[in-house]
Image (cartoon, rainbow, N blue to C red; front, side, top):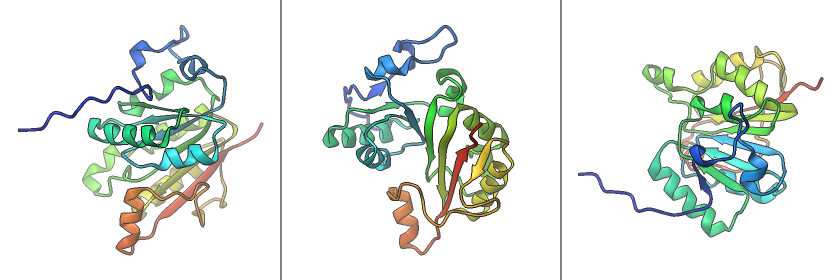
Length: 213
């Protein structure tokens, strides 16, 4: 018998059906947050404090996280409440189903994709987020000069991401075409990353920018 998760009422968790939207379906994020600031996203928050750490060093942004696991959302919300962060909101759903609808093109400053997105087993490849289609969508959402940061311990997936993102018109590899970055733009380890490092696995970093006009 599964245990029912305790409820946590938090202003940091938002539900799309109750948000102010344009006729197009794009959310009016300035009204959600109560101020007009650039947006940043993390796809697959898990229960990692990564987004919290980034928001502490770069507080002049709004942060939106996506996570489909109720258990992970609950743990993340508790971390946000303890940290007394006011500029983070989390949506409990799969980002793939709504990204192209709730964000305006060229409206996002930075997008983060961290482990465990990789789904390293070959039979799980269809669950991986990065593909030619999703890369084109991410490029479309980023503002000119906006950033895209990815990391993974799975070399096969890292090489796939490198190929796909290098081949996406409008994205520029900060390390040069065909190369991984020596370090991430934001050096905060996720719990999975720490776990992988502890057993000697290498973390592969990819840093991209949307090309300026």
